[in-house]
Length: 270
Image (cartoon, rainbow, N blue to C red):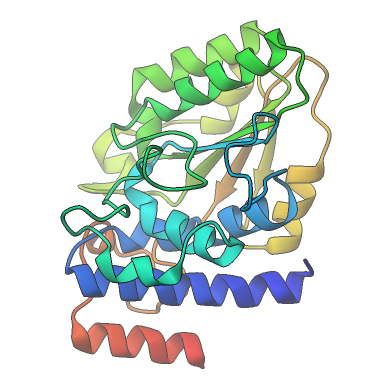
């Protein structure tokens, strides 16, 4: 898919994020909007997946470690053909397949149930190691939140990935600088994150603009060093695409009201 086509998909994904969270009156729009380009590029142009055969054992795998950003995940899956858009009306409702965090038993295209922050990276490492042991050409991708990187389990997982030489694993860090209670620096500074990633043995690619579709494409295509997992550190904007949500920590886990929804959708049309 071309960059222009992907851009249009991203616009629709953002509309869906706004509508899902507004309809439910709850959810996490800020971080969902910050990963829109990363997930859209990955699912449309890089992963070997088939909506008609979502459980194919030889498919590539994806783990949304920051599971609260499920609205983006569901929107991308619908655009890719895994689920029907009519399911959006039931987002975060009792008995819906589209819960506030993704459920792999209910949602086609979801490879891991996530939500407890810090655990998704370990799941992805296990998938990548399993593929290596089975000598299968399977690539595994995971997206982490930057605030999530305050969890010790993340670093145990990265250390394991390097130890087992998982060059079939790509870790993407959504570095939007904000988490639920404030900025990362206020809550628990991550320090020199690029240096930390390199010190743990990963091949680092840093993206100054994590919304630049061409740069994302190049980073995902870039060969890693043999025997090294790849880490894409993407500097993003929380609430990207909606003027009153951008870089505002309050939109981490708050749904837009009717007036705010109308304004957001109008901006996306313009």
